[in-house]
Image 1 (cartoon, rainbow, N blue to C red):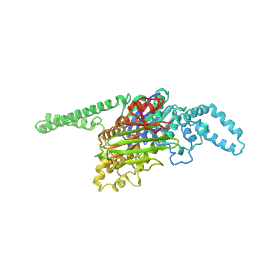
Image 2: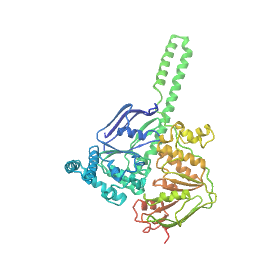
Image 3: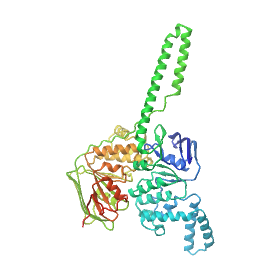
Length: 546
């Protein structure tokens, strides 16, 4: 076994139980997904496996070195971080200090210091441990993601890259590294369709052992061997991919419910038997003996406890009413981004559900933010419907004011404590009201954003990667809400399954063209690189001006 977790127990500093008697194994060479509701402790488990946290009880064993790709590598606020720093995250424990020392020696040599002997010795060890193979992989990575050799972009600040580009570089570095076992926390978040396709292919052909947290249903269907499923009251293993998971989980819940029902029926029968003999106990010694036997049998059965309970239902329950922004919800005219997007026009009508698709870095997010603010560049114009109420779901899960506990933040919007409790309950956050917003998981923050959108009741809804941090059940709820919502919806998404919610698909080509693709799968094929371009494909209405 590459990784074995046995009877793991972990508490937060305040005494809150996060992991309770958790056990599972990750077979060598397998691709195993760790799934479960937001806040159930998936990232905590990965941190424990990586050694970032220490168990309170139990053991975690690994027969190889483990490389850990965190959900947030920590470069967001580091203006000095470069592409070199990003790829170095994936290096083995033997190569990482050599890489850092070589970088220092090169700087010293450039400053005129005599470090030739040490540099030569360090390079020899670097070669012996496979450092040059890592560098060759970095060339592949930066060429694929940035279109440049590694030596040309090694010192490029990460702040100049999109979130998707940063994620793609780091992920590819881990997947192509020499580390045999990888732990990946939501590796698909922020990736475009091209990079998601690459990840699927790499997972299918890799000899590495991989344990990953993911909520991408297509990835879980196409690239996973098995799933470790965390529930709020236990865990279980599904020996298959997501395609059979939903049925397996439903069957398991039904089986557990039946077992509990049978246990309760037997407990009642044993109790009735005890009470019957208790009433007769005074009539004879034989009856008293039967009473004692039946009492012992009932108490022993009761004390052993019921079988495993079905997981509690934690489905979120948003309340969106919907309304009309106007017959024409948005009219965008002559929009362009120099050197990125050629001028194009777009009309969106009431009730349209529009998906904006394209690789990272082609200008989708820039357009999105300008549409939300209603601020256009020179020569472009945007008009909203006369009754438009704009709502925005941010990819970054940021709020205007994130200070204080969740209860305090909502207290600025809701009239009383009961309204706050009711709303938190509908979004599965009733037990987190005293937690600070910054302490919540990504999925829990996404639910808070949905609460604020519900408060606004928008009829023109902008959604920037809304499924990225939500758990599988919450994603399906949001899909149902959006399908039923009488409002205009525009979304940026790289979630292939989520694109089924929409009825229009606008593709941004890396050549600067914009077109409306009339078929969902065709749009995905173009963006993921399986089709050449918008111009070469039938079933595309070019929106770019000529």
